[in-house]
Amino acid sequence: MRLRLVILKLLIPLLTFFIIGLARTYLVKALSSKKNKRSEQMIGCSSCGTFVHESLVIKKNRDCFCSEDCSNS
Image 1: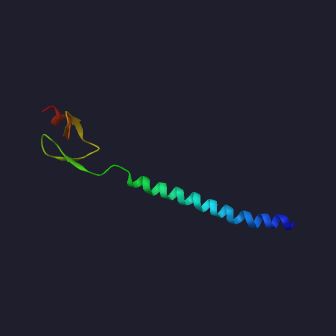
Image 2: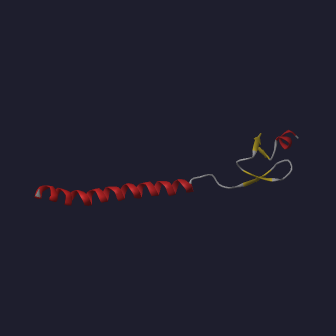
């Protein structure tokens, strides 16, 4: 009975340390992954000059266009 109590007193701090370390690692990875996302840059259309979010830009021959109409003109 006494041996179980001693083992329990040793395991609780070790488990606490391990769980805190895992939580810290998870939080650091979660927060740093948000920083690595794409920028929110607006790019001007090469044809009409309209600014469009970079995720919506149509690229042809190193030029950026706001729509298919502008890219074909």
